[in-house]
Image (cartoon, rainbow, N blue to C red; front, side):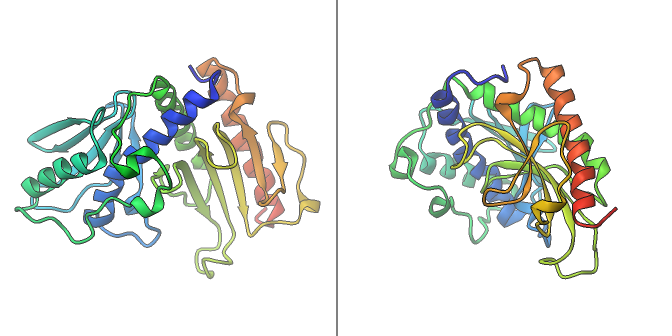
Length: 274
């Protein structure tokens, strides 16, 4: 399930998932309690429900918006009510109309300012010009990567300093937890370590895990890693490509745990935290 044999099929499913994630992200942006680090726009994987969930919406009837990736379904759930919308065969506009109605039902009829789909951040795609969501065959594989990344990083982040939750960001479509070492320093200069996993991007069509020390250290102070390797091409961080992980979930999980643990130790040393 994890080993990507057809990169084009995976990329198509990842792109559709990225678009669909904007629905829970939009609700979090306009209705969740604001957080200084913009964590309110992030989504989280709920392993029990098999859903990506928005942050809780502050409304007379509090609710969260979920996305079931494998079947491309939106779920709006409050304490006493749950509604589902199948995205396949529907446009972004149709989905936003449905979602707006669900928000209104739980928010005394009010649709908050800024409740708009972020087309300007999404780039070119058929969905941007009235195309419909398609049930891409590799959607279950994208969901499997999301589930594994969330589980592994949620465990590995215990090694970070006062870590954030494991968050999945709709704008970049990656998951990460950050540990800030210098709490009182300027955010641009404060030392930190980020453990993350990209589900694919413009530079790599397939997933990769990373550990990012900040500020970026000199390559001269980077210790060799037992699992993964350092990259200094455009950014300085530890990296392991998803294609290098075993297909077996248990073995892949163990390898990722080892990568995050070892790279975190080396990253902290490189920025003088240990």
